[in-house]
Length: 140
Image: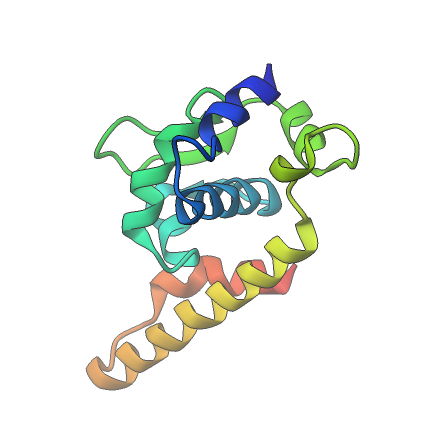
């Protein structure tokens, strides 16, 4: 079942390379984070809010996605999906998620969120509360 859903979500005849890469980055981020993350938090970490919103609908059959225009938590439905995506030999190679790559991308996204938050704080003398999830992820 997972292969069928992912084949449709990552079909090179229907999607551009960029759409496929963004969808895989979304999946990787969802499975790599230890704490559930809101849709807006996911978009901030991936540094591409529009791309997340445009591509997350491709995977709604295997990922719990909040209703349209709501900022709920995004998570996988079942832990076997994580195993499927990350275990060599289970998912087709073009669908497999490499956690090392995902963690590198997440660390980069966290640093970017914290950097922009610190710049805003310095300009407006406010507390950088929206970078909390970024700091938490980096502590793992």
